[in-house]
Image 1 (tube, rainbow, N blue to C red):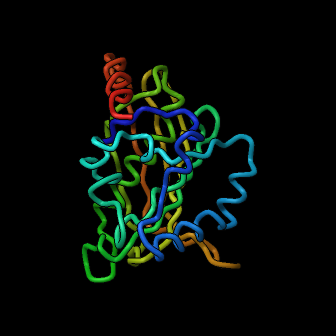
Image 2: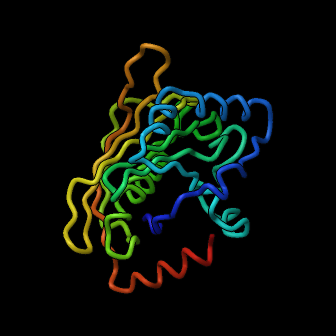
Length: 209
């Protein structure tokens, strides 16, 4: 269940990421220089961020995607994300290494579900009154196996907002090379609800950043 608060621009922490080895450095450069990243970076309607770097070091060490599953062979570098103004849409670029498999050579479906839970949440939270919420339901459809060692793009869009509720749709696709078309790997839809005690989530978010 995603419990995330929308963050402001990460300029102060964007440069913190220091790849742990040569392979991670190459991964970092590939994502940063990919045409998808360059296009989003040039769009003034999107804010670029690395949300996991805003977590405190103490909290990050115990966080599933930012700590436990991060590092060489896993989520090798902190994902780079772009949020459209008003919580309209969201894009995250990531690399999924060979130590994240459920079956040999295939990324664990539970990890993909977790990524979609967090990504769809980050998409819509800016559209909620207090910019915070929890997952009410999450529906996943797996389309194709996700090979280990893949660069992927998570794309989400907020389709409806009613008061404290937001409905979001999204998917994870391959990050294409050259003239290739992206391949959709897994799709999701979700409902997020801002609890009445949303100020507690805001306070928790401040304590863990």
